[in-house]
Length: 165
Image (tube, rainbow, N blue to C red; front, side, top):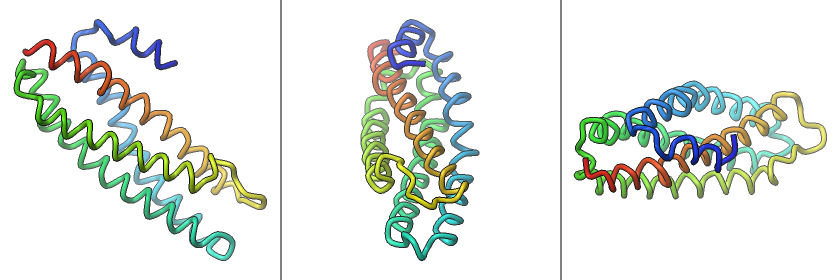
């Protein structure tokens, strides 16, 4: 679905429905995908250390930082921000929303570094199937996170703040 289609679909939906959509379609998959991707990145590093140790080590380190930040970020949204919005306390959500937006910027920076490290997800000659899958899955993660961040930054947060309730 394009960003425009996502925006159109959720621009008028009740905030509780949008939050539920974010939880089901973005948070739940991330809880599965992040540990799996970390395992795959470790395996690719272990298997191809002789070919690209520096790049693969940097990639793993960058991914682990992104994973840790996303896990903390989602917990804060699920335990603090989203319940505030659903309970009609959006007027008090300005501070938490500012924190979430800063963390979104940090996630985008990490995604940019992953894209740079992977040369725009172009797999090197001689890459095994696991390496190919890692690049494909990281690119899929980037796309999903950008859509996720768009829904929150450009739709949920402004609407929640504007509602004041």
